[in-house]
Amino acid sequence: MQLIRDVFGLFGIVESVYERIKKILIPPKAYSWQTLIYLSLFSWLMSSLCVGLVKDLIAFCGWLFLIFGTAWYTTDSPLYIPGTNMPIGAVITGFLVSVFAFGHEENVFTPRTIFLWPTISGIITAIPEFFEGTGTEAKAQIPKIEERQKILILVGSCMVISCWLKFYFVTENWLNEYPSLLVDNYQGSAFVMKTLSTDKIPKNGVLILDKLAPQVEAQIAGQPWSQVEQWLLNAGQNVGNLGKQVIQVTLAEYEERFLWRIEPRVSGVKDAYKLDLLSIWGGPSSNPRGYYLLKSCRIDPVLTSGSISSQTVKKTEDKNTTAEIDCERKTLFFAGSPPAQQ
Image 1 (spheres, rainbow, N blue to C red):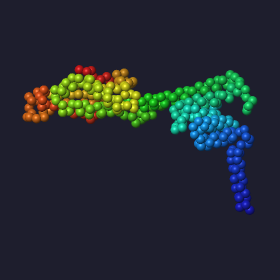
Image 2: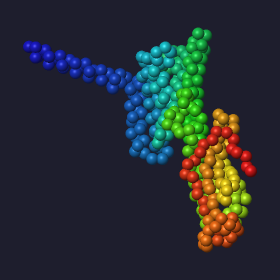
Image 3: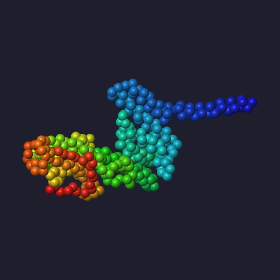
Image 4: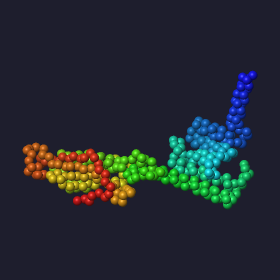
């Protein structure tokens, strides 16, 4: 007997679950939220079988059915976000509206979709306050004074959230286009997340000098010493032209390429020359004097034939004397203005 009761009890549970599922899935009448949801699914199915303008039109109708069906279902017995008068259904509907209006087929989670979501949800929450009645008999009304205050606070709060989200995306876009801004300390920022693994030396500045040094070496190494000295006299123009080419090629994908410039500094060291290559940041910085990076190169005269003596080495115009250049691998970082040109 107990076994029979258990079997019938199990059948009762299954029947109860079936009735609940049936109540959700089967519309009680044609004019219901389930009908709109089913129409949206049917529209998407039909749009997948079509092409061109017909496909877009059917998909558009499918989005409308989904938005209105979701809004209807979530307002039947609304649940509110704790501590607010915003229904959770308005948040869901706001997300669907934002995706429908500003999303793309390849990526629905665009920045515009995200930062407009709170504002759209706040507006959706406020709209019913301007109407009274139900169904097709609703008419426009002006909300009561106490309701106006709630609406203003709710919509205003949502707009503030949208502004913060927009600021986050703007900041991220800045750092993608101008990664050298990360040299400054953003560890306390709630928006700049990439700085947790950021080096204090701007990588683009280092990259510029690493690409520039071999080109300078190619123009100097093995050249007659007299020509090298003449090249060094015009180092500002020669290095500047090479630097512009390197920056345009190396930083082609970054907008910050217009904020870097290259300058040389030439000084004498005994019987040789010291050539400092500077990549100077011209963009915004917490340091009012900015910063720059430096890579040093040493240029020495070398005899290609004959005996070597101190007197011979000093004859820099000798046709057998050529230049040898050696650039350091390490790049130094300095905060402040670059040294003055001599």
